[in-house]
Length: 439
Image (cartoon, rainbow, N blue to C red):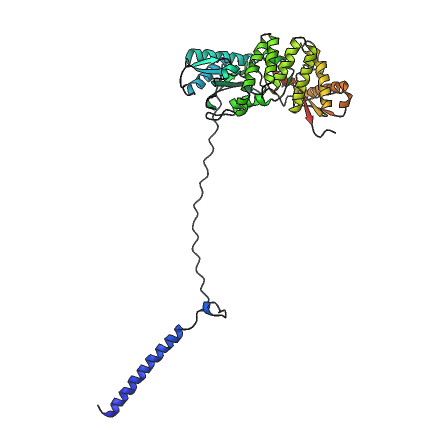
């Protein structure tokens, strides 16, 4: 190769090496350019193409909740004896076997679930239960409810016997008696068995026992409400209502007092009612009514009047006082053949004086049984309320302009059977309720 060619090749090689070096320098310079987040001066953001949103996901439909199970059908309406026998067998069969036998069980006297009254029907139920236990459940020994028997913390039976309509409610036309029977264990404090039955309404004798038939006043009583709730508002496994347990000592004394009164042993009844009054749960209407009735039967007129004041005071404190004034049919005059009609004047005087002393205003509301046209019942109930209103204002003129009369017809029946006899006297009551404000 001549000298000229070698010179030309060296020039070409140098040119290539220079080009490579320049390219490397550019790469280094680019790598040294500061990032946007390293610069003091904000940089214009780079526009990024918007992402295509994802296709919506189909949401599976939420299944509708299953329909609520219909309530169980009410038990069939049976003859009285059959209903009682079935209920008693079911409650004893379903109860856990006693740890050792025979186990003591006591019956707290059954009552009407609306009024708390005992009747010939509830007494008959108790007698039949005792017979069932003796014949078919020898692992139990039935004892009377007394302070002594309660000390042994036995099992205890409570029950209600209440007229109801076709929907088992205590409104409208009554077509049967609902019989609820519950066994509780005072050792564990739990409800251990329950049974419900229905009996034909014409099969039961709902005549109140003497102590309840003679009672002049009715009102809702917390002690009786606790008893009823223990039966009707409980299920197996529930704790026994503490209000019921706390009142058991008083209840045992009242049961003995009621039996003594019904048997005509009025001195014994008075002593037992007064003893019950001294217990922690003794502030209840059955006690005040019992003391009044016993004093009356013993001919202690002054003591009876004082006892009736206690009855009225209790009703005013409870904001409800239903008086069993008996009227002649279709009239606003009192039925004079009633054995207590001669004391109506004293009742009205005591009500007037106690109302004035307590500075209360009263609504006087008349009630009737469902017999007869509703419009006539409304009118008659109002007229009877106005009659009692006028008598109260006559006894104490200070009550004028502090009472108002109203008629409820048969819309608030407690019994609702429409028999118009001693079994549904409370449906024909006159109620006195304190009203506010009193001006």
